Length: 94
Image 1 (cartoon, one colour):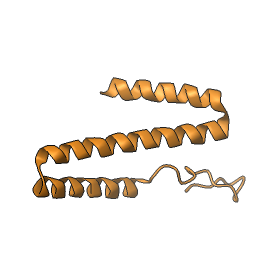
Image 2: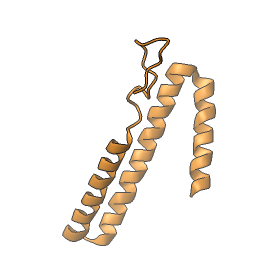
Image 3: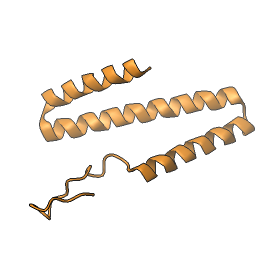
């Protein structure tokens, strides 16, 4: 986390809400390992379905947590505006 020189007691980081790169890669490795185990144990189709459900649940959870954080810190108007923009970028990506 980065701290400012003006206010050394106040953290300017992500407040622990967003994972750092190491956590993200570790989570991705666990997800791939889970997919491989399910594919060998059950079926490839089931593994793909489980992977899709996990990715969808993660996306929904991150959206809800981001909305709550922004609404509590900046007000509901900005949070709604940010959420609509996020959904627009998400669906334009796919």
